[in-house]
Structures are given as C-alpha cells and as structure tokens.
Image (tube, rainbow over all chains, first blue to last red; front, side, top):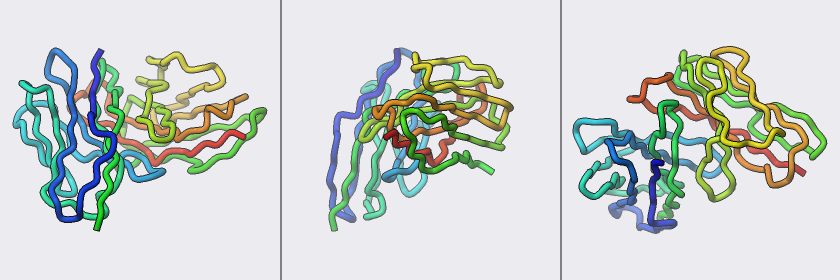
Length: 113
Length: 114
C-alpha cells in the first residue's frame, strides 16, 4: 500500500523567513502527489500537484514543491512566509484507481511576527 | 463552478437522533468521497462512489449510511451515533478514472454528538 510520511509535526518560522515542509512517499512507480492546506475548521485547499514531467511544481500562494525520485520526497517550499500561511499542511498520494487520497499526518505551521 | 457544497456547516445531534449530511457538486465529476477527520488528525477515507455506485467502504460502522441519489448529490445518513463520532466530515469529488487531476473538497460539516 502507498503511504506518505511527514516527519515534522509542528514548525514555527518567522514572518519573511523561508519555509520547507518535508514529505516522503512509499510507492514503487511514479506516484501522484499533492499538497493541501487546511485552516482551522475549514476544508482542504489544493496548493499544488505532481503527476509527471517537470519535477519542480509551482502552486498557488507562492508555494512550490520538488519531486525527487532518488529520495522519495516531495518537499514543499516558500521563499518568504506570510502570517496568513499559518495553517495545517497535508501531503497526500492517490491510492488505487478510484482517486481516493492517502494523507500524511500533517505539519502544523506557526508564523511568528 | 469548481465548488463542492456541504450542508449543514455545523450539526449537533443526540445519540438517538437521525440526521443527514448533504454534499453537492456541479462539475460533472463521477467520483465522490466521504472523509472523516478527527481533531489534529488527517482525513480518513470512509466511502467512495463511482458513477453513483458504492465502490469503496472502508469498514465503516453501519450507523453511517451513504447514499448517492444522482451524479451531483452525495448524502451521509447518520443514526445512533456515539460521541466518538464527533468530527469534521469532508466531502470531495473528482473526475472518475482521470488520475491526472485533483479532488475538490467541500468546507466540511462539523458534527458534534452529545
């Protein structure tokens, strides 16, 4: 079965600092990978996705992620964090042919002034 | 229209009540999903409907009963729930067997069982 691991439960960064959230996947073939963001009590918003092709993926809100097959990783980055980026971030992978998602445990991002 | 609409946004119900959660999308998606999310946890898949037929049931207790009356609607009927069923219930949809696209999520229904 496929899985994703987010090693960091909680990260705190200063506003304006750079950010990298880690995600590792377990799958033999090329996985379909996603990053979603969730504000408290809200649904999930897609930040970006990777299916194939260019391994550096650009998303919304200034986020990007890089797919590295050799490291089984799909880390999320942002060069300058804003206070509004404080939220829970989930890495996810599609499992099977039904399109259902398997989520990592999430990383909570706090932004300090 | 890329919205998935869930109603109600909040629901408080007693353990003997019967209630239903509703989800609607008008994107022509033929796969629809229910996820359950407990506090500080990731969403967990409950059910998948493909072309209005139940295709995945992740061993969910029978007190949760899904229904897909047409290609735009997905319901989750609730009966005799327990307090531990309190959670955020998320609906999502995606094009069926089109794997190079993402699932679209609704804002969820916050369910409290008292």
